[in-house]
Structure formats: structure tokens, C-alpha cells
Image 1 (cartoon, rainbow, N blue to C red):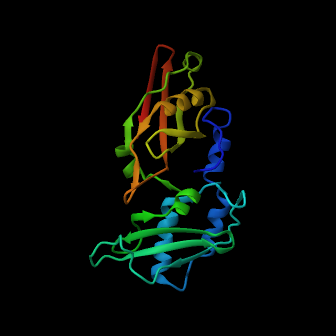
Image 2 (tube, rainbow, N blue to C red):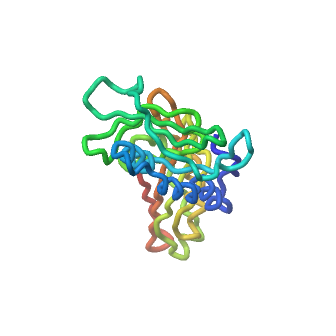
Length: 233
């Protein structure tokens, strides 16, 4: 679904996460916003606020997408939109030459700065990754485990926060992990703990989708006999 990635480990974590969230194509998206359409620009902005490109290959060409897609919106109201006065629109990101068409149904908030995703198609799931917001993250954690403070790290007084990005599968299992930042001596402990966490599925309408979530493990020590680990969310 998200391409051919390595299993979560301390040596390849950063490389894996860079592949998962590949930024080059994300920048290309910004350049192709439908600026002539106020509603379209709002809807696209909401998509880009919550999604990032994956490094998934097109199964037909076995190559990554070119990054030269175009944005558009549907002229019709999608069936999944509620019968209310709220603005609801279907937005597309298309690569016609590669037969790829990502689509999302977005229910915009009153000022158009954010919204709720009511549906997405298979291409959107394959090529774009939803990221849990800070407000969503705590509710999505099902079970958690604190890292084991490495004795050698405690002995030398190593401390600080390790930020870990986790790619969560459709059923809530951690699939890939990557260290964003943190003291090297405790990064391995944070990764091992993150791999043991369980999460609730992320739903877009009736579809469970993979998503990214960020965890922070804070290691604190004053001396080898006093050590604590704080976890967020």
C-alpha cells in the first residue's frame, strides 16, 4: 500500500521515514493549486494540511509519480455529503498520463481553513498519507509502553526528548518508525517502545486508512539511581 519499505529499526528509521513522507512531490502540489477557484483552493489547502505524498510506485509503470499532476473539483455534490448548508466538495489530484486520480470528499468548516474528510478513493490511499493532528493523537492511542531506560545512558546522565514518527496500518499496528530527533543513546529504546504500541484505526468515512502519528519519549535522569520517562501523547 505504501511502497516497499524496510521494517522499523534504529539504523534505517530516518531513511524509511523520509521515503514515507517524500517532500519533493508535495512541493509540486503547492505550485499547481487552482488559484482561479476560491472554493477549489480552499479544499486543496485542507487536503495538503492533513496529507503528504508517499513514495508509492505506480503499479502499472513501477515508477514514482512525476509530480506534474493537476488539481480540480467536482461540479456535482458528492453523494457522501450531508444534506446541510455546510460547504462540501470533491477534490481531485490527477495524473492522466499515468491513469492516476486521487479524490477526497471534504466538508469545509465555516471559514474554509479546515474541514472533515468524508471519503477518499484507492489512489488517494495509495499515494497520500493522512497525518493525525495533535488533538486526534491521544484518542488514537489504544495501548502504550514506556521505553526501558538504557543503563549505560542513565550512567552517563543522558537525557532529553526523542521524537518518533510512526506509520500506522489500517488495523492500528505500527508498520514503520523513524526518529525525528533526540539523544542518540536513547533513540533505540524509544524505537523499541514505539513498535510495541497499539493504535485505533483512522477512519475516513467508512474506510480505515493508514496514517502517521508522532510520539515523544522524554528521558530524564539526575543520577543513575533516579530516572524517569515521560510519554506523549
